[in-house]
Image (spheres, helix red, strand yellow):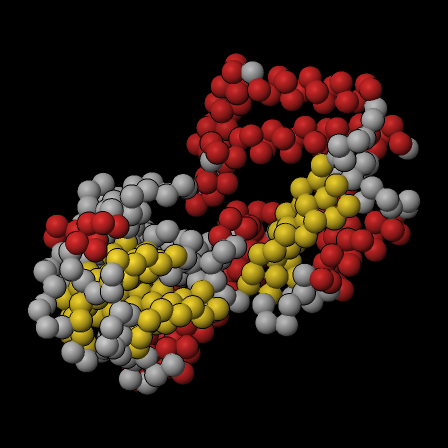
Amino acid sequence: MRLIVSADTHLGSPIRSAALRNPLLGEGLKQASLDTFRGIVDLAISEDADALVLAGDIFDNDFPDLKSRAFLITQLARAADAGVSSVLIRGNHDALIDHAVHGDLGLDIHLLHKGNPSVEISGVMFHGLSFDKNHVADSFLPDYPAPVAGRTNVGLMHTSLGGSPGHDPYAPCSEQDLFAHGYDIWCLGHIHMPFERTSGSMVAIMPGIPQPRHYGERFGGSVAVVTLGDGAPQVARRDVGHLRFVEAKLDLTECVDQSDVLDVIGAALKDAQDSVHVTAARLQVITARHTAEDIHALATELLEGIDRVFLDKVKASPPPNLNNDHVDDLSRLMREEAQEAGFQQASAEVLEELRGVLPPTVRDVLSADVLTELLDDAINEVSLSLHGMDVE
């Protein structure tokens, strides 16, 4: 038997954080999400898979997003028409999209939940439980059916496992306990970084997010192809993401005029082009006199003539050997002040106030763990502005 395993497709995600910085990138990411899911179904058909497994967070919203649901049904029906069954569970983002209210998804599309936790496909048993609310603090594992003797058993679970940076503890469960349950393979969702774990002949797969939505998810972009037969399951990866995030490092310290600057930025953006993927480029720039805003404006102009590349973000910092006593003293004092406990506390309070007025979908852009980065960027911008004035 062959399975295509995915999770965390987040259909219908508004991509607001990217759209706030670059509306064109926001629209490109929305389209990439749809194109990637179509590509996953295409892969399942072309690989002659027996089942497409979706381990939660298929949608992005807690409310019933009927447009995204119709898209999902259309794509999974296309898979079913080609002989590929679908098995899925609801994750924490899907929790309020209720099958009991909106009906079944269709023939050969199996949503597993507490009232229907198992399904048999081609002699293989699939077991899964769905979120019925946004957050589950306890492990689902005790409620999973026992493995069926004499059959291959596949589990679907949406879980933070034992915890992961950037992820709250959702239905936490240790790898040791997962393997002790006795299933041959676990198909997991929730953590967007792909990985596999093994214990003897048993395998646990986190396929990761198939279409990254921001730079922090750049290591996603794939699904797992699992072959079940004699012996341990065989796992391979397939690249399915339509839009990739890359970082380009630029050094503008040797540029003598704007023409040189444009040449360096333009070369970096052209190098980011890819024949397969659309690209979102983050520019990491060392410069003695240009702010991130200056570079952003120049790069935006250059991109008018460069296809399939979006500008994600610009981060500018001065070279370590840049000398201006007055400016450098001011920068040093600002950095020292930024480390003071009182300043940190006041900054965190301002950040929390801003988060309070933002829509829930973009609050994480200003999460507490980005405070140091925001302060560092701000000090760099002030320093570069003052250095630029001094050079002029």
